[in-house]
Amino acid sequence: EIDVPESHPRYESLLTRHRIEHGVDLGITSRQGLIAQGRGEAYDYLLGERTTESADRAERAAAAHLLRADHPVLSVNGNAAALVPGELVELAAATGADLEVNLFNRTAERMERIADHLREHGAEEVKGLDADGRIPGLDHERAKVDADGIGDADVVLVPLEDGDRAEALAAMGKTELVIDLNPLSRSAQTATVPIVDNIIRAVPGITEHARALTDASREELERITEEFDREAALSAAEDAIRSGDL
Ligand code: PTJ
Image (cartoon, rainbow, N blue to C red; front, top):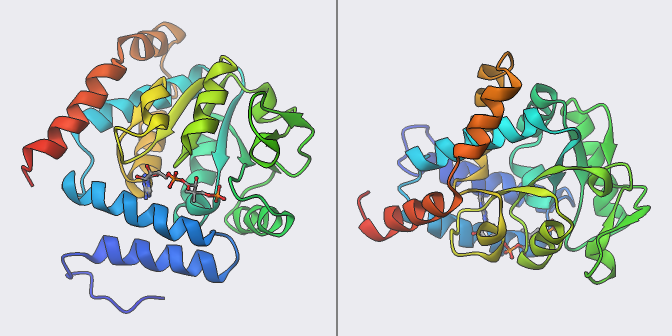
């Protein structure tokens, strides 16, 4: 593991970097994933490397959507798999969601390695390898999904998504929960629930809310999802960045 004292002011950030680097070494994370992480870190720094109150509300709304869904699916790419594999397995268990590997830079080898990595972290079933469904309006590789996975889902959690695919999934009428530290990114802008938080904190945050809401009535879950204000969440994130109030 990594030799950084926990008291180091940038401990979490250094640990995260190490996980991403390790992900590249394991053939899970793409080299572009390193660049994406750097971009995310810059926003996280500006947000004070914390879950804002507004992001916490978004995490609660995301949990309510997952619990309400007929068929929720958590989409997993190379960065998510390297950073929060066990946490994604826990969220899937807490909400009854499927896990599906869906890659921007898709290769058969990375698909297999990510699926294995999730299984090593406790996943029973991992979707994405059949690739017998398609997202309309996208070029070939990124469009591949499982017909009985994302293809059939009504609610999809897409962490660190690229804008085109986020838009195409939204165009299919799916409820999209997006984790992205950049509130101005197209994926955050098109999401039903934009969660502007580091995936490292966001996934355990959604799980915690899902556990607290396990016994909530259908009406209560509906109220939470309906009361969520996506525009307010996006402007709160932008305000937090601009205020420089670290
Ligand atoms: O594994 P693959 O092949 O599917 O590729 C995945 C990446 C992430 C490389 C690919 O989807 C990509 O290039 O994404 P982008 O366009 O760089 O977008 C990534 C977004 O995620 C950016 O807006 C970043 O700010 C954000 N981001 C990066 N790291 C984190 C993050 N958001 C939350 N938590 C992070 N740790």
